[in-house]
Image 1: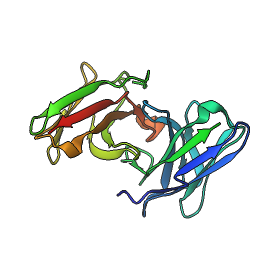
Image 2: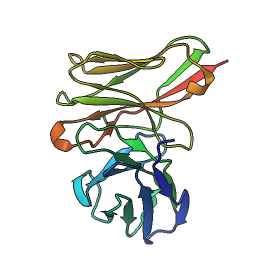
Image 3: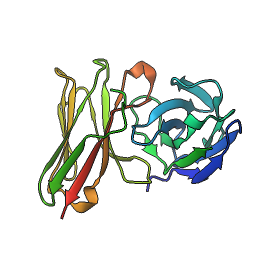
Image 4: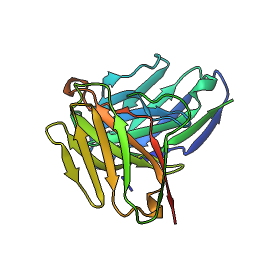
Length: 113
Length: 114
């Protein structure tokens, strides 16, 4: 176990709705990265938060947004859900932003109908 | 490189054999590489990493080899066990300037037959 937790484990939403996913980082880690993993594919980087500030963003539209809190836990928010947003959402925590090992949580499985 | 398609490369081995999983990367500026194991329904689990100033690193039953000339990474698992059955991903950090964002390869499904 990595010590990274995510909630909820599963979620079903309909198109156009909004969703918030949560992640608690491993003790001592100040950086959280979010990834989207479609079925049968590798994870795709969404964005990273370091000490409550966004520190890099992948090729995702602005309706994907995030937050990091003073305790380094994090939220991923997705507005105006689309069918293609159905995926496993993974968060990973690390002890810093440069060449630090990222430890993943179990993920949240989102299904958009 | 980026993940493409829905069909993972597969590798099937007998219990006790050695396994070699290969990965090609595309960015010559990448300087940090990681292998992850992902079991069904779980998040990726860190196995081993290697920095670009090394060409080999060993862990418990696993060895990672890095060939920067041909941009190739491999993971060797010794005495493969049924519990090693999973999807294995290589991941790279494109450059120090991009922080620790990871770019994942397409993954390889390893099946260990008893």
